[in-house]
Image (cartoon, rainbow, N blue to C red):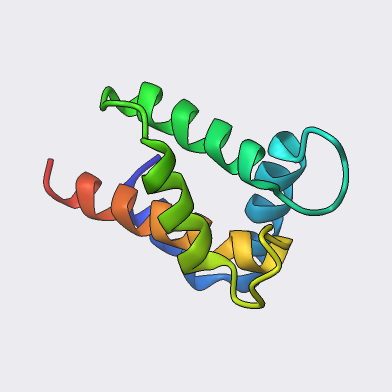
Length: 99
């Protein structure tokens, strides 16, 4: 996907919501409607593997969860997860712009 295509998703709230919902359902292994720490960790491991970097430490997973978990319940709602999706899309867009 081009950098412009990614920007279009970021700027179109409906498209962003659809991307978030699709990704969320794919990683919400137990179907609880929330991402628990183990599910977030698996997402981070998969992304790290896909981009060729070391898998995250437990501390890094804890830090991401703490940063995104706005209500402090120890899990991510779809809305909280969308913040992560936006960050990842921004990084992808920026990386595309550097090529």
